[in-house]
Image (cartoon, rainbow, N blue to C red; front, top):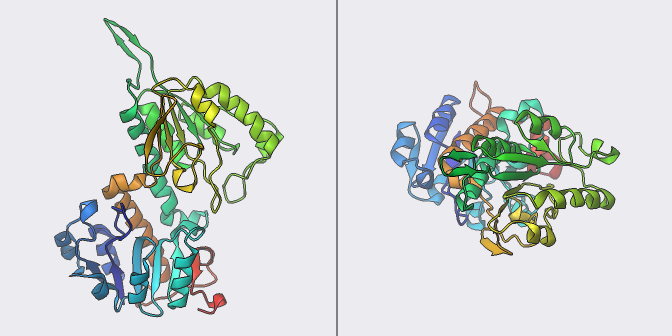
Length: 371
């Protein structure tokens, strides 16, 4: 059975879906692996290293995809790539099913069984396949590093013969995987860190990392988390109370990292224009939700702007700025997923459609959908 890795076509995408390390593991499953020439170049993985791991290198996507039984990608395929995939092939990638429904429909129409890796259920068995967590972890780290680079002052307290430099104050809004890593990174850099989230379970997590938790602690807050671990949309009344508390807190901050996203919805506004106006000149906001509309009304996707003396950064692919590590983690996630759908004895596809991981991730080609 043949597994294919192609070079990513989306603008600015530097990651790759397999590394020489994961190629060796796929070979151990009995799979033949083909890699498009230059697929790992932007992530610093050379064709020669893929060959040494047992992969065949082909010059173009047409040759790689022609007879592939399993196709692994970082981002969803373009129309010309879908046209090259054979009917019955399996695709696993970050497919953005809420916003790229045309791609999902095209995959279904081509007879491709497609799995959106971001839809994996949050259960213990799926943790090793959790691409959102592996990539968000790096995003949280890079957000703080980039903010520190933009910030015109030092992060830690410094006591010198000429006087003392006060530590920077960092507020992290949204304490998921990215937020927790942002807290930890900012603390390691010596900042005074506070954080806020609508999920009550995050209070202890923030405090365990040395941060101060900021939230309106009422009854709605105590019931603000879904069974799947996501934040529930909050009432307008709660949002007003929380906004008042944040408005008071944010005036004192030097750096704000916002990470709040609800799958399939526009990102909630956490930092209003009035709040931005209240911040000190030279402050920095890094909005990790800029690609979904932004957690501030001024954020612009993939742009850094200045408003009212505040620098607002809107990166949409921070893991891609750490392409080697991001690819390594993503490739391991994909290997663990492929291991679930391949018979380890025969090397053939063996998809258990009753498995909750499979049912949660499939977006095209499932038997129930007529695939």
